Amino acid sequence: MIHIVLYQPEIPQNTGNIMRTCAATNSPLHLIKPYGFYLDEKHLRRSGMDYREDVDLHEYESWEEFEAANPGVKWLITRYGENTYSDVSFLCPYEEDLYLVFGKESTGIDKEILKKDLEHCLRIPMVPEARSLNLSNCVALVLYEALRQNQFYDLSRYEVIKGREFLKNV
Image (cartoon, rainbow, N blue to C red; front, side):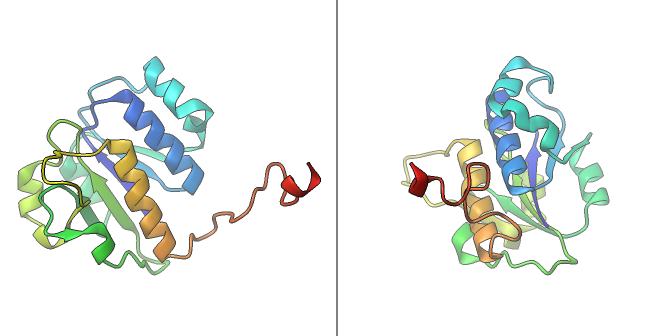
């Protein structure tokens, strides 16, 4: 299973969008405190829409608590990574969990955490003048690459709600 981890997220709209992405991909979401908002904030509800109840949400007081509770491979997405997210294999056997860790919007993942696991630090390529991309965009980009490498697990490849033949019947 592919998990999304947000280390000390600060912007409720980003977290709400990420909740929606996690619900749509059946990816558990792990939030590590402190947050820059309250989980019941209206901006979070609006961007997460009605998907919030569908998210497998886990909260932790610290990085250490998260690590102790979640064995498995952890890829740290950071501008300091030497490899890009597309350079690695996210293939995961069914008995092993994979964690994609993203840092807070202002400063990213704590440098002490990164220094302990440099070989698992990944970068999203961008022009040298750019500091970063939007957090929810980064999560979607890397998560969908991991899902693609794993044949999209049990995700639907066609429209289910309106039906496969919807456009043909218009």
